[in-house]
Length: 378
Image (cartoon, rainbow, N blue to C red; front, top):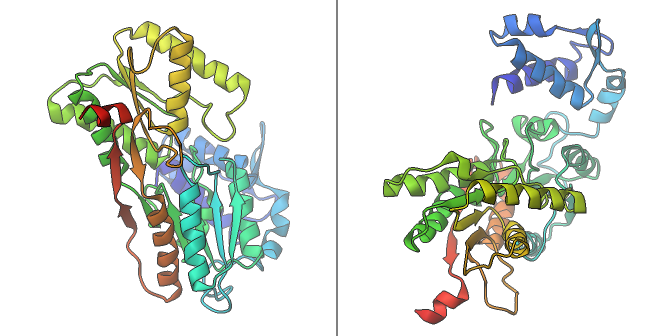
């Protein structure tokens, strides 16, 4: 957990415990920086995070104060477990809530089916809530799941610079939660995911084996998103292992059009412009490691728009690919075992319900699938 998140968590605990009441003044940026031995920038970020989640109100020239909405907080918490003391989540009928940004045939659908199949085998009802990669929607989905009787959560966390306060609270208080696809750095939460670093290294090594050297990595912003951060590390490791200098300028993480909230014409047009500028700055680029299938499709479309051809002029590799596609795969890609990720997540929830300790990290194997034209030529 970063320094500003520690300050955030400390103040949030003070508010939720009632030691800081609605209208009470919050310590200033200077006071917090002194108390926690951090820079003013760090303390400011913590206060901005609290204000963003509407726990405090910042008044120019006066300071920060606990928001009046907190008057209803303790009433709401009667329906929200913070551990065995408030509500015995180990008792009564089991209900699982699956919370994820979105899913489709390229990634997510088989994981959802794996979870549903396992729930059916246990005789457990399954709730499904989509967050569309918005943290405020994710927080409300968590609260709604608890109100509706969920005794365990499986959460695919959203992208974001800050961790979800509701999710952190449940994890820290021992409520049965299993994360899928990505873990939260510094948080002891049970997580099931692919070894993204290893997988990205394999993709990049494949391109190096094909003779490519000017290889770009492309993704949405990576802030506090372990999946993307690990894939970047794997990409860099491939160069290091071969003794080839990696160029940080070849890492492009400011593309938004593949996020659930980024599918508008404006985002797509902006991303096209970003890629076009990148190609102009790096004309020697011959290959791309795309962090996901939709990103690979977008890049292929944009290159074609620029008069380039894939794979004649460029090669693209990616994570995930629609397995039910009727045509041969056009990209070499990593196939994640979504079904096993989903089933393992439900099994781990059952282990938590039994009162047993579960290890934090559970890695599920993946496969490198080469594009069909290469299979034909072998």
